[in-house]
Image (cartoon, rainbow, N blue to C red; front, side):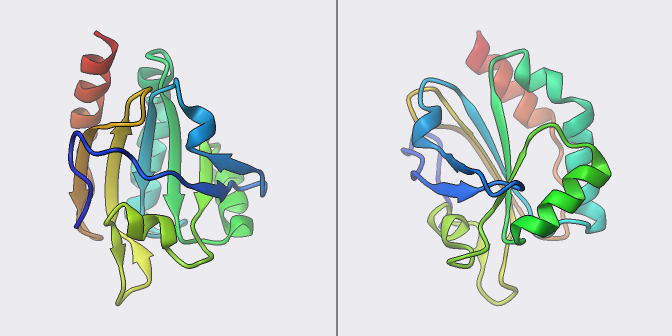
Length: 153
């Protein structure tokens, strides 16, 4: 079962594409958009994260830190980030495999991957927006932007 609005976001520490550890606890005081996705280099995921890249100012101008999470290993994320020019961290939930995705309720055990879960966490660590889409269902990002706008208001 995935998280709901009002829940406290589970803490985590994961390596980014450069193997630098990013901890949600260290970001307390800053709103964070968590974007779980199935796999780097896949068609739908690339489309979603490229849109996020192209519209990143919508989030950063509102003071929101964007983190994208998958079960891919860090070297694959580094290559993908360089290829696509992403300016946000790609976090590796590779080992223990999918542990963070599991705590957020967005892990597909049979496929061994995260599904498309999106969570906006406010500065105090509470979920203020939650959306889960199936692996093949591309997300409409207007809901994320609306949630950020509400948070900033």
